[in-house]
Image (cartoon, rainbow, N blue to C red; front, side, top):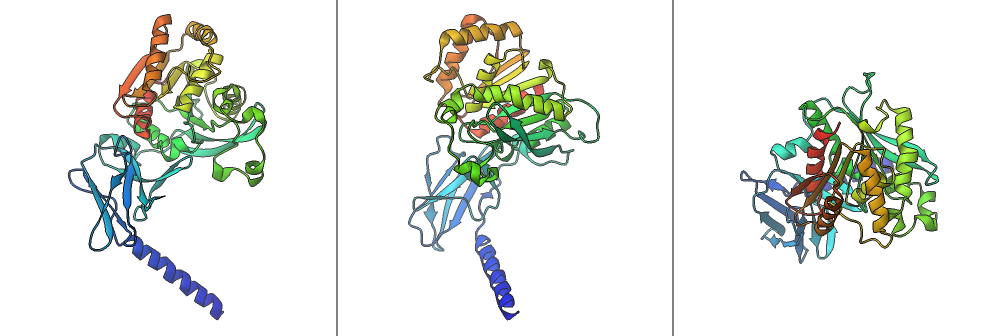
Length: 383
């Protein structure tokens, strides 16, 4: 009994001490003009740098140690948006211990900063009816495994008998099915747009776009993670092959349409994705031109950089897609995105064959700041 008491007291002491250390500094501190002060209590550190999406080129910013051993850095006023950042302490990357809000996109785990304003309000949790996000497992015969996806159902779905259109939303390279929820804020964007009457209530399905993975790392069984991938699912082909498009159309969509009240026809079906997901969106709609009436490609252009690219095949596929007459083909890219030229090449190719599309060019680069923005602008023009 004494031993248990001692252990409990030790746990309380250690936990309280950790909390006290965490509360010794305020970080980040948003000032009245939207400039931000970042702080880290690290008296024994020799060097601390700040890295985040506040700085478009992600250049590490030096932080200065004050007399109390607290490193500080003030950055200029930021426009209202959601940002992520980390510290580099003597060469080691870490989240901000004074900030208990973190987001994840694949292996990127970072602290979150929200600057209040019109755009960040759209990403925030507001006093509106909320939809439901469900983790769903489904069989994929194409990939030979049971896979996981996230499904957003709009407010009122459970009590309604209505049927809904569906958006299939794809993540980028290195990410997984949790990225559009954790870092993309997709569910809150939809909640707020629907509440404002700017978007139709819809179901959003977010699959895992990695052909060799069943799910996000934390949801994958140890047996599966240790199992050697088959040759067909390894290497570049995991992204550039036909497996994900085939699994999406032949496995996931039929499962969703059998288990959710969705309108099961192309005019009520949309596909969109960012970066790798933008490639997979193109690939899927090229292979299956009659499946989607709404197509959104974010930060991905002409994929001629891949070794398996065949221009004649691509041209033939696009002619079939053109015949299918999708109601919307939407392309978005930031001006400083490293794939910007590929988007220029894609648009030139489409212009040559008279393929209609809508183009959105924004500031910034290959960043979630753009992809959240694109979703907030794409969702209102669907269906």
